[in-house]
Length: 426
Image (tube, rainbow, N blue to C red; front, top):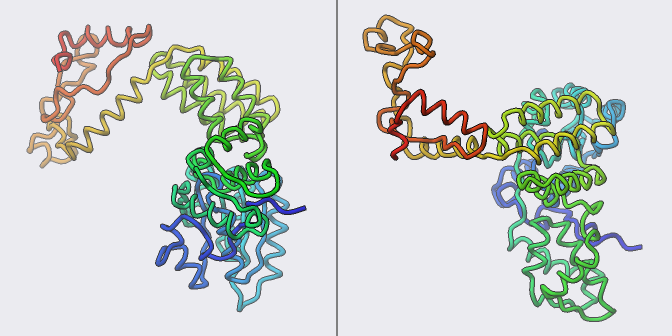
């Protein structure tokens, strides 16, 4: 049985590698490192199908050094230690350190990552980690500090078109089929910048046609994918599409839709911590001040999930999902911080008003630092009106309360305190 097209076309050298020019193009950092023969530990962060595993294999082939692979999904601490011991025994003074490639390193527990530290630090292995998640959240700081971080991007249109042409002209099976790429918008759109998905779709469409020539159009691609909605994606789970549908269902106050997409992720083997983290983000971004308890419950969901594990964790995720979906919605906090950031970028480092500055030294006190500051707790109701923004933007308004029960209370309080706020007229 023939290997899948994506495996048959997997690049063996950097010159065959498509995309990521900022890392492997002429003069780029990874290419220089590989060609010099001196590779230090690093982590590749990027979406699926952009070449993380392929790059690791190319490096191992180029350096002609032992190459070990671990999957964070199936490996434990014992597996890590066994690989490190084998690496020690296979290490020769004249040879580069064996490479340990860990796919989905974001799924490694803290103890698993801790077990790698000594080997990485002493050069027993050169670690190459691959992750689709932000390493700042998922990789322990000591390991992250001992590794370089390289960010891979989704493949661009020209990269995908180059890959399609290579597939139909060089693959031993496809080049016998006389394939014409009459239209490519649909196949590019459905691939989402994922090379593996692109090749899977191409193979699906070609296999569905009788022997002989194949004309690929937007219509044929759409039709084939509608007939085989799970055939072009690993485990039938379109990771980014499904998490998008999940969050949008919560934002749209549809608990049934939200729980359905949650079930799709649970059945597809999605990392529960990934789902819980998105719930915390949704609580802050989409529910916000309309129901401040939402972020507390989302955080409690995350903590409880870490304590009780799986499969009971699915119930905790479902409870938080339904609570967020049925909560009142507001993005006023999200909009407020983005508005404030935009103003900072527009106006630069405006000086802090003197009365808001600290005066830890006599000189600062003589210069007027902290003078005329009014301590709110010394006044009735723990409030006194004074200016808290730089002079140039003293009347700028960033938080715009939205019309819901919780924010109406907050807004009424602000009006009672500030009276007729001059910001209201802007």
